[in-house]
Figure (tube, one colour):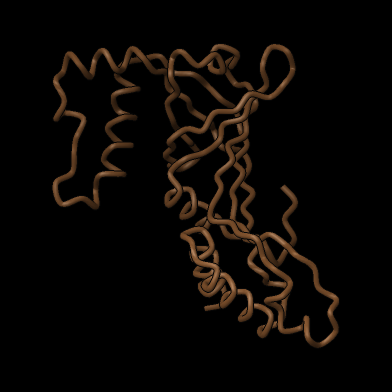
Amino acid sequence: MYVPVFNAITDDDARALVREVGSAELVTVGPDGFPLATLLPVLWHDDRLVAHMARGNPQWRSIEPGMPGLAIVEGPQAYVSPSWYASKTEHGRVVPTWNYSAVHLRGRVTVHDDPDWLRDLLTRLTDAHEAHRAQPWAVTDAPEAFVTKQLRAIVGIELVVERVEGKAKLSQNRSDADRAGVVAGLRQDGGSGTAAVADAMVAARS
């Protein structure tokens, strides 16, 4: 990932983005030398990113123990119109761009097929996503025979994180007036994605 100094984010911010998004595109190389990718729900704790994949997905079968992998986490993103820049009326030397936040995690991948490992992972994933609910659902709410059957339909994925690259491209290289114009333009455009980018831009300046 190309990360200019003014777009770099801290490890804490990278972890916060991964936690907020909750999923990652796992990219590995298949037996034919071409990349394979699957979007997976993930948890990142210490230096481990863990997930699960459908057993029917052929990607996991091509993963040798310790194979290099890349997990891509994408935050909110939006098109930025040059018409929003205050500097457009000053000199006109402006072009469109794309604002976004993303984290790339690189490391070695291992596949887990142990039922206890998988049950623990599913429990932690479920607890993380259900915690805010008034009546959170738990894995133990489902019949044990059903859960056991479901566990046989997945495999676990573990990426030992060796390198973290985090980027928040939020018009940091523009003037205050230009940034204010982009925030206003994004909010006027509407939509959850554009509003989230506008919020991230405001937070980045606070």
